[in-house]
Length: 187
Image (cartoon, rainbow, N blue to C red; front, side, top):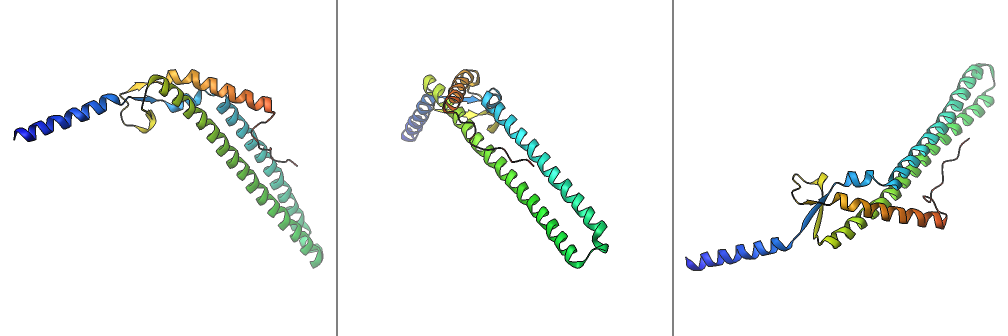
């Protein structure tokens, strides 16, 4: 019985000392993201392309509707060959509209993915830098936990994140590159 008691005491001591060496902190990732000027710029750029794309698609749709109405008005009074020609033109206009919509959606998806990847790299880098300075083994996002009882390092990460964000923005400006994407063409 004494052996079992001593084994239990030794096991508890080992677990306690291992836990004492592990430092855990947490961050509010949404607060971090909301402070980034590059994220705000990315959201604004994506919104502008969505707006332009929507306008372009509306114009294309209006033109298709107008051509269809003209065709319907002339359909009974023109030859079968003219009807066939107009139907082909309408089919092409409809196909162009659908293709352009897919192009815009693909562009927006690509931009969003690239921008999110870049932003998350900056957030991870800032968290990593502060964690190493402060000696934290783990940093957990508040939004993914039920209880965050460790140290909140969000306010310590923000200045580091802003520094990294500014540095990356300046490098892009110096290199003369933007997001690497082109806005949709307009008619």
